[in-house]
Length: 383
Picture (cartoon, rainbow, N blue to C red):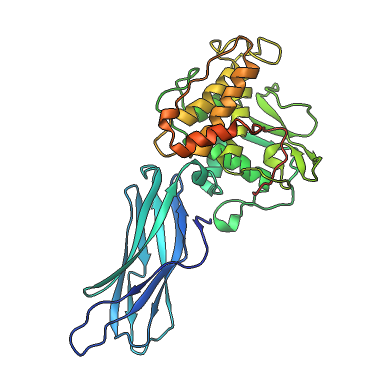
């Protein structure tokens, strides 16, 4: 599983220090193959750091360790390496193993890798980033997949991305197509969503409510629209893509692999999750009461539930967990539901005070752009 954004060796620092009179100062370079780390909800991962001695470095034991933020543990293997004169190798690789827990704070936290030789310390720092974009970007682990498969029946009768591979068994996940990987990533993110107050229509966490409302998801090409539910309480999802007018693809967002200018972070997965919440609310016995729309917000039908779900993610989650551009997009989509899907109208809560200056500008820019849609898009996508 790839946890980091890999690139050129990051944090290369020269390890030097004062030496006794007449003795050359030991010198070694410490660098790590990670620019930033994208945190997991929980679980483990690893990356490599490299110790590079210089020819004049004396024979000595070099001790390696790491200082991790709260909610995360870190180990270096081996913890001690022997440097010799002349060096027996041009470099020495060490493995850094990480364990994440849900207690890791959202935002950016420093992870420090240390090397010491007597009184001569050296270190390099890597930023650990935790937010909905980073958390939702990972291929689910085998354990995550087994949990989701236990909770839902997923029927892949239509998969326009068949033949592609976005997650791999060899990397600790499962061999999944682009569409399958996005579906599992979305559901795995939903499992972990925790709000500061309950949703308006249920006291359960949203994932648990969904498991009780429906049996599963059926991805199909023989239905005109996504709907809920079939006799076996399956949400029917129209999973079809076609050629778009600009030469890319349009149709089911999670199955599009060729297009232009489409954000592929949590905003894409959130649109799909909103669809599931909307359809599952029908399974609760809430039909539309104003044609394809709802008459009022207060009746808490399918559109009101979708509105609340997006609003709760935007405004009722842990600090720093929701990036400003994601928050702005969710609020924009909730506003569109009020304006176009609630016949009696509704007032959208405005909370600009908890946005940074950049977040406020994102809302203003978003007003000039079309909304994301789970059914009709033409954008550039990555797995």
